Image 1: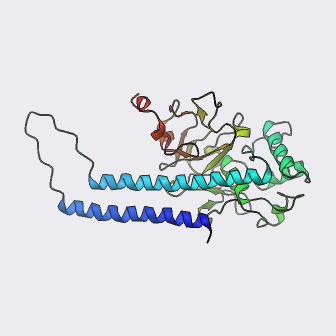
Image 2: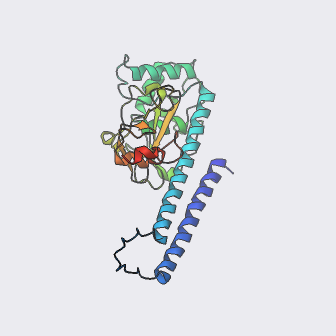
Length: 294
């Protein structure tokens, strides 16, 4: 049985167990929890502790976050396997592909030429455009769905046979969304995040990356860009030599598209529940305690 499928089922089972336990606890609370006692004394009332229902909802949210982080980890591993197979991480910015002098076009052609030295890299870059790959959300699906094993036509072969791929990641078909029709490249939405897709930013494009926003009409709210790093000793951006994968989190809103990790400088409120491949929890969880009080 496929290992990715087994991991997903284990995570999903955990979420369902949390839900069932929480519903049982909430029902017990409704029956057994006594009414609040009025405080008629002059002493200030203490803050009420979270109810069982509130604790359940919090636990369920954490379980959903864990499921998304698990999937991000699997996609992270898939991109690393891609690098092992093809010799480098793929680009993520497909803006300005009509301009052969643009850094986006040059990065795409350079990657294809390196990965497939026997192909016509410019012709294969043109095939990428024909497949409708435009956004960093589509980039994630395009590269991880896999390329053709034909060393001379790794992309153009897909125009005739979209199934002729070596898949790098097993996507759940129900969560693949096709913003421009089945013949074009899809995006992949996370569970519990509404219609917001995962986005992929390659280190090759950090400086010139076209932000992911509503202009693409591919789901989600807000703006997604590569996150910067507080530690300039390791680089200007997080994961400076690889890539970033970002989920919009429970609210389906990427935030403002600006911010530095882990301080949270530049974050909007919606950035704070985002989940990534460079943090163990939400971006808000990673903000140092001193920064949270500001």
